[in-house]
Image 1 (tube, one colour):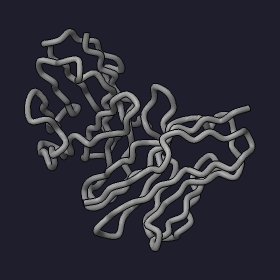
Image 2 (cartoon, helix red, strand yellow):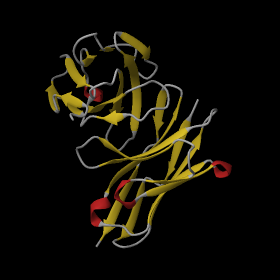
Image 3 (cartoon, helix red, strand yellow):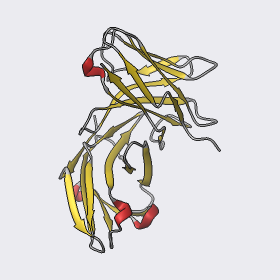
Image 4 (cartoon, chains in turn blue, red):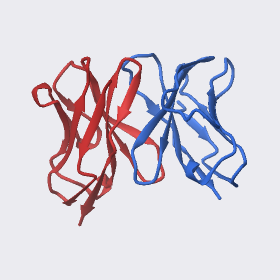
Length: 114
Length: 111
C-alpha cells in the first residue's frame, strides 16, 4: 500500500538550471497539491491539480514555476532558471476527492540551489 | 478565506508533562480541522482530523484535540509527553478545495 511518492528526495542545482520534482499520488487519488516549506517556516500552498487540470495556482509564483498532472504519469513541479531563494523543501500531497478531504503527504524533495 | 494561527512557535515540556499546542482558526464556512506532525527530514503525518462529527477528536500516539466553535480554537493535547513526541506540529484548516496551514509549533521534550 504505497503512499505518496516523491523523487528525487534531494536535488542540487546551480543557479540558472532547471529543477523537476515528481510526485506520484496514492493509488486511487486524482487530486494533487504542492507546498513549499522554507527553513523555519510553515507550509505554503502553491498549486492544486486534478488529472490534466490546474484547479488553483494562486500560491505559485507567476514566473519560472509551472506544474502539471498528466493523464498518465506523475505530477511534475518545474522550476526554471532556479535562484538561491528557491532552496526549500517541496512537498506533494494527494487526496481521493475534492473538498475537505484529508491530504496525505509525501516525504518531500529538498532542493538546494548553489 | 480560511486561515490558522498557531500560538507559540516553540514549546518545551518535560517528559511526562502535559502537552498543549494552541491553534485558532478563521473560516467563512464550517471548517474541517487537522493536526499534522512532521519529524525531521520527513513529510507530514496526519495526527487527527475534525469533521463536525464530535468535538473531541482522538488521534494517534495519544494525542487529542477539542473543537471549540465559540473560541474558534482547536488545541492539541497529550496528557504525558514522551521523548518521541519531539517534532514540528502543524494545524490546518480546510474549506472547499484547499487547505491552509499554520506556521508550525516545534515541540521539545526534556528528559
